[in-house]
Length: 86
Image (tube, rainbow, N blue to C red):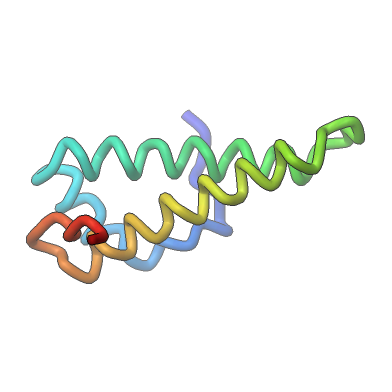
């Protein structure tokens, strides 16, 4: 198992995250996807490969930011799912 990356945005809220993962399979899936995407983004940005298209990097960044916003909503409303945008 890889050690957690130090740059992660949600490290200070790890206890809340663990609680939410136990309470909600949806949150657990969202957070798992966020971890995967942020690891992938970090790997892409720190690799020696120079032929990664900017559009692809931007898409990964955008998806990671979207997941961060979803997680922020869950952390703010700790005991309930975020309300859908209307």
